[in-house]
Image (cartoon, rainbow, N blue to C red; front, side):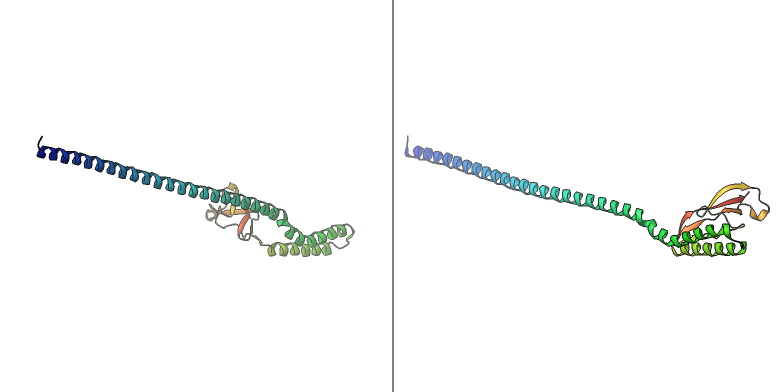
Length: 192
């Protein structure tokens, strides 16, 4: 072999060695990149898991807080319902006392006119107490238009006149509103 051949062979070996080294470095770089990506993904999964745990904790606390709020408001509502009538009943006690006195005096009363006046006074006292509490009678009379928001048709009769067809002919029972809310519909008869 000549020097040239040896030199070529030597260069060829060096080239193979360099190529092998380059391939190895490239593989090592790829392995490093893959390891870095895996590391980054693991860190992201860890941070996501921590964030999920925090969210679960917040959710559980919020649910417990809401449940406590619901129980507390239900308890307060029950207490309010139990004591809601107390105020009205306290205001009606004087009227009840007056009715007791009136019923006792009816048997021994000689003047029926005095008894009637006493009952009239008691009725006015009762009316004023109910008005103070927001109770108002509905103004319903024969000839008014029927309104299902305020009236309840008990029956329908032939209209005595043409103008009363579809209108209120008679009021059987007064209707009442409590603070602008209907608590009893006026019972009426409608002309057909």
